Image 1 (cartoon, rainbow, N blue to C red):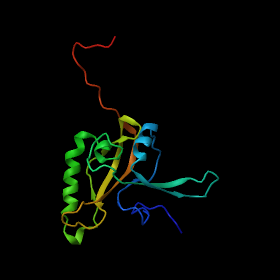
Image 2 (image 1 turned 90 degrees about the horizontal axis):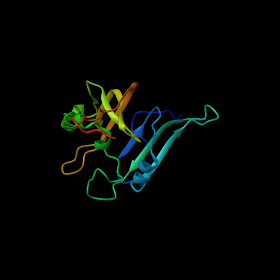
Image 3 (image 1 turned 90 degrees about the vertical axis):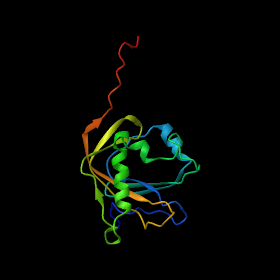
Length: 177
């Protein structure tokens, strides 16, 4: 009995990087250039499909990526949190990762939830942000000294009416003709 879950998605045994991007609900748009950019880093694409109607609805989609370059760069094809999170939210993201990483062993499975809505960039809409009223972070495994730490982030309770576009900076005396 396969049912959608908001927990660990299936990742093939052959995939060495336990990093995946989760899309639980809703519609996300994507430009062809973003798909091509991410193609080199994409190692698995898994869908949970339902036959409850003739369209075979996709209930969940999971993407797994592996960085092909050792140098982190914002313009690489590797999807990164920095690309999706509003720059002004980055400090609170880092604080939340620190809190989750330093939880006592008895609380390691606890989810840490953001108190305020989180805005994240819509794929394919580089200047638009979607509002998630419930955002949580939790560890995706054990914290091992000198090893990378992996986290699961869950975004839910979307407010489609709160799609925001950052203000264009206004420069005094400069006009487009």
